[in-house]
Structure formats: structure tokens, C-alpha cells
Image 1 (cartoon, helix red, strand yellow):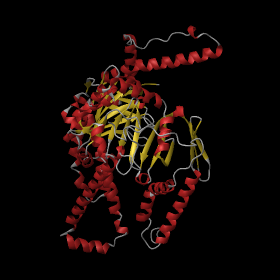
Image 2 (cartoon, rainbow, N blue to C red; image 1 turned 90 degrees about the vertical axis):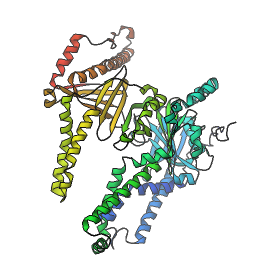
Image 3 (tube, rainbow, N blue to C red; image 1 turned 60 degrees about the horizontal axis):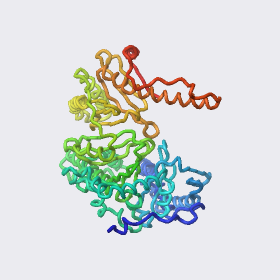
Image 4 (cartoon, one colour; image 1 turned 45 degrees about the vertical axis):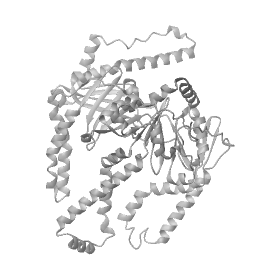
Length: 594
């Protein structure tokens, strides 16, 4: 028997949705908090560098602080009053603007994703936030900060393209297959190693608030149509993800910057007295401070990871994946399969020795943040990654044979790593009195260059290219051929002397796209990869030219049957064209794109 939450149906249409509606008044507070968050860095700079803690600073008097906060509250209320939204004529219509009135009309056919999230303040009032994304947009096209779950669900269900069709197909499949679907749900969990930490939705749901019909809870799985299997991150793996997180460096830089400016608020004599009391000499004190700062940064990194990826689960739907995550702020991120451009498997410096990796997805116009990839799964064993991809994105379950850079390319990898190391050492000698302590990083740079050369590999099969490289983390990229926007084989004078070429492919991801490179390959191998892509580009160009001819013929009344047939691109290039292509590339640069 289904639970009350699982059997609930979609909400009835809200009344008067076609008339302008204001957000819940709590949106005024979210506006204030959002403004404070945006001003956090300037406020910190003012406090530490502008004498903010002094007698005449901004933070010197409670009256100044109170006046500043009151001003932000007034602005937040004004913004709330000036913001309205409605759904009319298959469009989401939003009007906003404090001084300049702006109108945003988003037709249904342009909408690609509608995401729902719920922060701490919103959950306290039983509200959610709704975010609308359109194809190619780097940021959300529209965001409604505070509305009821009923309204958000109605907008999502009625304005998401093809949503009704997807749900009808999913319900039909569930009715026809019955028990077979339930058996399929355990597909990835068939491996005993995986089942220890990757659990199905029914096992994971009791631990999250998603299945509780309490005020402020995020949308239930049945309401969102997420009846496909879900894989959840266990708390044990979440803790491992936090302790090995790459955000440790960011946290350390923030803590170090704050500590470096403590002299503006702490008296120097008090510091010297403290050193004489707790430490035998200055060296012991500063070593202790460094260890303390590293420990604090490490704790902050763990806490940040837990807050961001707690209750992480991924759901599989007919045409999209839905990622749910967050402890303080619940977020639902939707990734349509049709928009996936690449999948990356990243093995961090701390995670690779433990056998763990992180999966990312690059998608066109979508993501957790503009210009960044979306975390597909925060922590997996490397042995589980292929099975996970096979279940969640089977189109990318490919293992093409790869080729690696030749041994004569090793020197270039080492030199390429030593150059920034030398620059860093030079600047350290100029700026720091203890720069000689940095010299040991030279052999470390040589070792890193060797492991970069060893990790590099590239290969293709019928429709997929696989590129593996290392900066600090070892990364494996899977890209479908039809997702490649351009491919470039290039070299310089030193590479030509050794018969080497580098390869770069570009995909559509966010506003600026993303690129992946395979450095210092055999020249013949690099050219083979460009020839692997070229027939598809020719086919795309032929289709585009044919469409242009058809449009021109329709305008002039000429029959489209008289259009000259485009040459097929499925046949391999003949020997003459292949030879001419290689001769053309002797100049050192070949770029194929559209």
C-alpha cells in the first residue's frame, strides 16, 4: 500500500494565476540577505583595509549598522512590492524594477528547465523558490524567490515543455512493465561494493525531508514524477568527500587573508606578550599558527561540503536527470539528456590514492552556476564510475582504445610544469625572506610533469572521443562526436622538430564553451582524430547548405527537387584528399569547425 506522500497527486491549479501575483512577503527578507551576501566581500575589505573597526569606521557605531540595515530592509520591501508574476497565454510574465520598470515574457517553447529549491528561511514559512532556465542562458532567465509549493508545482507541471507527454509515457511504462521496472531500479546496485553506499530511492528517502509532507519540505518524488531509481550519497562517503575536497585551498586562502589583517584590530604589544607566554620562540609560534590555520581551513572545507552535498540524490526520468542536494538549502537541479555535452571523471590528488573520483556533467546553458559544470555525483569509487554512467547516461558508456604521447614528449611535459614553478620561485625570492623553503617544490614539479605525461591518453570509437589528462587532478572526458563544436590540431616549432602535435576540442557549455586538450601526441595520431571528426562536420555543413537552398527555392518558387545533391559524408576520404589534407597541415595548424 502506498504511503500518503507517494500517492499524492499534483495540486489543483491556483486561482487567478493569469492575474499579477506578488511573492510571499518573506521575499523582502530574502532580498536583504541576498544583498548582504553580494556585499560581503566589499564589507570585509572596508572592515580590514578601510579602518572599519576604528573610531570613525562604518562598523564603529551601532547607529551606523542599524541605519545601513534599515536602508537595506526598505529597499527589500520596495523590490517585493514592485515584483509581480503571472502565467498567461503559455508565457511566464514577470514585471520588476525599483526605478526602471522591466518586463520579462518567457514563452513555454523557450523554457528548457524549471528548478525548485528551498532555503532555510523559505522552509520556515513553507515556501520554495522557482528558477526558470532557457537554452543557452548563462544564468537563470527568471527567478521567483518566495511562492507556495502549490504554485511552484503548477507552474512547473504546466510550463515545462513536453512534461505532460513525459509523464504519460512514464505512467504507461510503469503500468505495462510492473515488476520489471522495480527490478530495473536495482540495476546499478547489483554490485555488492556499490550497494554499500549507493542506495535506491526507497532506502534513502526516509533519511531526507523530501518524503515528509511538512511545511517547507521540498517537492516529493511522486509530485515531480521521479519514479525512476535514485542513488544517494551515504553519510560515510559524504564525510570522505569533505575531508578530501578541493575547496580546502579556497578555505585556506580566506582564513589566511583574514588572519593577515588581524593587526588592524589587535594591538602589536598584546601579540608579542602572547608569544612570550605560550611559545619558546617566534619560530615555534608561527609554525603553530600555520598548523592552526590549516586545521581551521580543513574543518571549514568539511563543513562546506556537508552543507552543500548533504542528502545528495540523483533521480532518473524519461528525458532528464534531477539532482537533489543540500542541508540548509534544498536544491533541485534538472539536467535534460538532450543538453549534455560531456561527462568528466575527476580523480583528485587526495582521492585518487583512496580509489575515489567525482563525476561532473557539462551541459549547454545549464548548471549549478554559470560557467561551471554540474556535479553529477560527489564521490564514487573509480571502479563504480563506469557502472554508474552505464545506468544514468548509457549513451556515454564507451571504452574506446586510447593512444598516449610518445616517450620523446616526456621532456616537454616536465618543462611545461617547471616554467610556472620557476616563475613562482623567482617571485618568492623577490617578495619573501624565506623563499629558500620553496626550493623543494622543484623535484615535486618534475614528478608532476612525469605523471602528467603518464596520464595523458586519447582515443575514439564510432561516435565518442575519450581524452584523459592531468593538471593536479586526473581527469577523463567523454564527448560525443556530434557535440563537438570545433577541433584543432596545432603545433609549434619545437613540436614539429619532434614530430608532435596537440589536439583541442571545443564543446558548447555555458556562455563561453569549454575545451579539452591532448598535448604532444604523435603528429599522425592528432591528424587521425581530426579526420575522425571531419566527416560529421561535412555532413552538418551539407545539411545546412541544403536547408538554405530549400529556403531560397521556396521564396523564388523553384522546385526543391532540382537542388544539387550534397555529397555524402559517410564515405572515408580518398587517398588524394587525405594526402592533400596532411600536406596542407604541414604549416602547423589545422582547424575544423562550423
